[in-house]
Amino acid sequence: MVEVFATNIYSLGQAKSLEVTIAKRFPTYIVNFDLEDCDRILRVENQSLIESHTLAEIASSLSIVIRVLEDS
Picture (cartoon, rainbow, N blue to C red):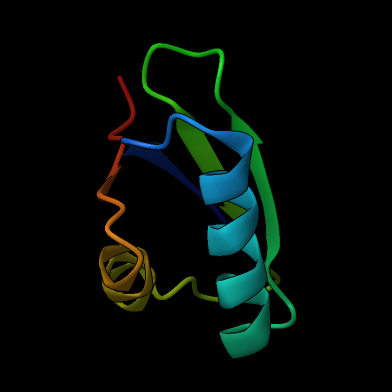
């Protein structure tokens, strides 16, 4: 499964902080970012279901907003 999120992340420090926090809660998730994209992309990959709601809560605890990008 792959889930793609738009974020309000504007620094590598914020991205790294979110990545570390996600890894602690979900060690099997593969996380990467494309901060050069206009949506400041967070991409999460996992063998099974991705808990998008929990990821949004984790991000929110770091003052980061994420929203699932729908397929066009």
